[in-house]
Amino acid sequence: MKKIWFFLSNPFLNATNESYPNAYQITVFHWAALNAAKKDPFFAALLATYQPIHDAFVAAYNQWTLQAGLQQGQTETIKQLFKDLNVNIKTWDVAIQNVYTDTSPTYKGLLPHKRSPFQTGTQNDRLTAIQNLIDAIGSDASLAKVKTAVTNFQTTILAAMGSQKTALQKTGLDSDGVEASRIAMCIAQYANLGAMMQQFAATPNVIEPYFDLKNIRQEIQTVFTKELKPAEVYFIAKRSFKADDVLEFDNNGNTDIAFYIADKKDAATGTVVINVPAGESKSIVASELGDIANLHFLIAKNTNAAINGSFEAYLE
Image 1 (tube, rainbow, N blue to C red):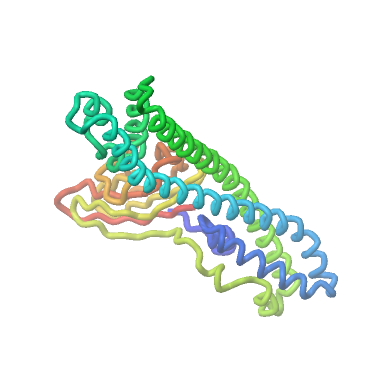
Image 2 (image 1 turned 60 degrees about the vertical axis):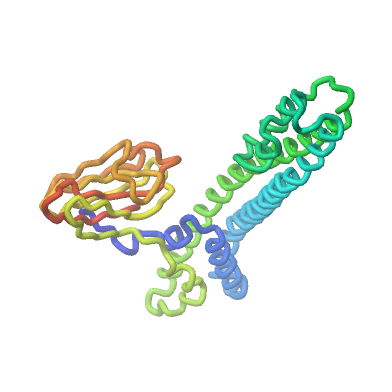
């Protein structure tokens, strides 16, 4: 199996993968250190190059966190509205019973299951119950006020859900923007590290204060080794793969090992299965695993039910 040389692996990308807050901490630390040393022409030059990249990431990150907060607020609003529905149906029910007794055929046509459909089930089920009541009331003048109240509530809750959907779509767009900015920032820090290593090759300790080592060292695991029991299904890692990410599997045991992605940690198989025979290695790009947009759990399975197997996996 190919072993990547440590210095060819960007530690900033690894440390911030799937963690924008960590990326924010790392860039703020590095920018502040460069800014404090800008009287030195060497660091001033690094700062001048890094400044716009840092600013772009911070702006994208702030927009992403703002949108995420708005999305959370809208979600809470919808939850509250469905709680309000539990109370509102009681009011509507009482108003209906003031016109039609709960044993009458008309009442049973309006609320055949009484309040239950409005208070239990999925959100869509409860929205359907609201629409069914509006339709059932129809042009009944004696229930015109009830129909107005139900219709107004329906308008409110559908508007809130529409805003939430828009927020979710916007958050997705903001996430794309912050991801691109994160990558650019990490590459710029990696370049600065290289420049400092050249400048201070004889005294590398000088470099340390310019990088947030505490957060950088929290880097994502890339190499996994495991001995598998007979027929064992083993969860390797959860990842958001890009189509061209490289994965390498080294089967150093005596049984065939199957690798696949799934929607849960203990999935017994996958839609696409990469089989690596005993004693062999295989290198693939993530797109070969199948639906990487929706499936994020990478799993290994010993295909032999009688003897142990083992593997080493490298995830880019």
